[in-house]
Image (cartoon, rainbow, N blue to C red; front, side, top):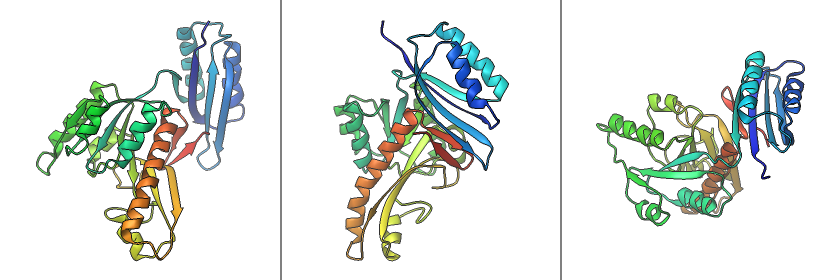
Length: 285
């Protein structure tokens, strides 16, 4: 009989024995644990864990398993996410004109190495429409102006809800989301910033970096918050440069770094390896 594989990611106030209580309960129900990772944060007194298991020896129904897990969560003041590993999360990608991050995501998705379902692409420009159509992914053109921003974001959130979206990926979507939309998407929207945050925030970061004579350039994938370019960081990638690099060369190298960082961040989120921990993240490898 084919096995079902599951991922359980959870966190709770850190106390002696919390990991033992969870794993013992899983053992009692016959789960076969394949992979574990955990972290105890001494600054927030929070315990984080990711457990991958299969049901080859499960002695209860999956519904009874979920009920038992819910009861345990109440006992430990635990928040958690349980998902069948084969049930990939739905993602919507937002993009403007530059397509290098979008191309990377689509290529990895089509190759089967990005465990997501790309269900739609939205854009305030039509530059990526042909690419979307080639991949047979629904494309939504949502032009935006200062006067139409509220209505445009209402359309965007409607698309997100329509496809039961787990994650909105801002793949060089050159628009600042409203505070209200950021709150609605808390922990469910990832942005790529073409800089090694927290340095050189805002517009034209490569120009800022060039002016300061930096010796490395990078890109930062982070969760979106109302504070521009200051959300919890998931992935950072860097490459060394020197004084001979022009702004144009920095931009071209930066495109590769941005695409790699964003794809890596989306993959880790989809695999439930990222936990929010106040203003930062815990990565459970």
